[in-house]
Image 1 (spheres, one colour):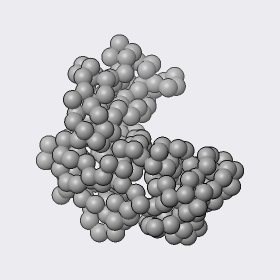
Image 2 (cartoon, rainbow, N blue to C red):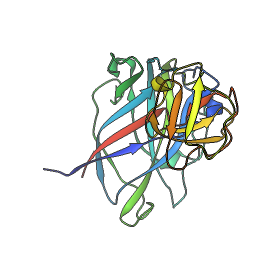
Image 3 (cartoon, rainbow, N blue to C red):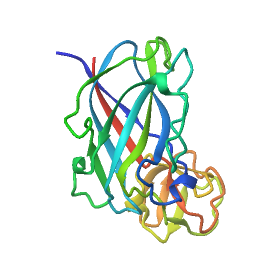
Image 4 (cartoon, helix red, strand yellow):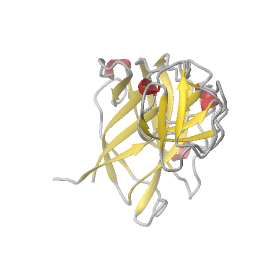
Length: 243
């Protein structure tokens, strides 16, 4: 029996891009996000995407995911501009795999988000053997790969109306918000920025619909009244491997 492991990838989607609202078909959702796997060949046997809702309401979408490696030690070029067309270049020889999540693959039933199960070209998930360039990983014994995504169809929208309630100063350990509930939009570990990409902090606990407890670093910057608050990683991908 093989050895199994998972890798969690949390791409950064800037609040300035999220604030643009609905992504169109074929828009770039996020550009290359690096992750490490053990050195050598690893079989990708499954993928799950955790897709946050629009202001805490579950949304339906279909997504394409692309996997790449370095080429001669050079990171692949961007696939395009986030929230715009995938017209990027200089990644052609770095591509090594991919998968998609169709709207039919979403596990309907949750009110505030969706869970999507990966597959290949409108069929079952076909295992793919992935291998990066030797010693390209962050640590010895690992290789570095990259994940990017475009919108296949649907209307994904991560625009936020959770707003800062009153100007607040570091180093306080809570962030007070209003307009839309913090409890349906954020969770422990979420990295928060305001609509201008100003770092606010990392969620330690949601105390209530209007109060967020931050981690030991507290509030990182001045939180300006009425600025919208964003989770910078609204989509999480969990990749399952056999080695």
